[in-house]
Length: 241
Image (cartoon, one colour):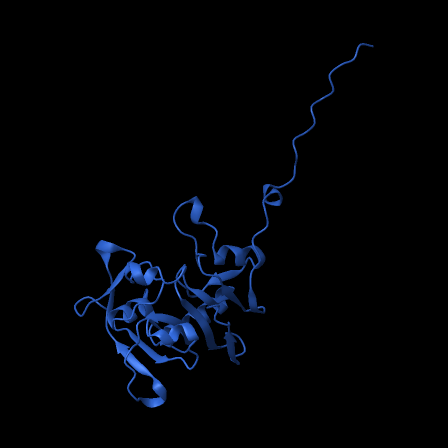
């Protein structure tokens, strides 16, 4: 019998997802049935942005591993450090309420331009109390505004660790504690007192931006009560700069 054409092979039934490259590894600080604590790198969005090129983000990577992971708070794309996500709606409500009621303690490390005045105070802490508002004409920037701003408070003190490069007077390493959680609060408050964060592409001068390849702001510590057990939890991430 004359040869006949064999039927075409059926198309591959392999799911599209299996053909894609796996998500980059997550830096996991802690994970349990109620919460996940991650160490976000600088340059990665915390949540998806607009457009197909802004869908890779910390929350998407977490949800690929824990489908019930839900956003509770955010860090700016340029900021690195500790981020907590809830697992499930019940844990999300509990953690969101803790943030709203200011029962979550956050601490950051930053390198700022210049050398802030450091008169003796209680344990070295100083307070910036300036109301902040979104600068609608220049989004995503925020501004100090006594008319439109919401109450915003930041505590800062000079870090006990000052590397040799910081002894020039050009920069100073600070510990920061945001009492409130406004958009870009730490960045705007430090700019307002004349000491923008080094590498800040929104609030520093071109010269101050050029001093570092990234924003020198890192979330080093997060203290909160576990959303289910109520047990005090303390998570930290070493500052990478």
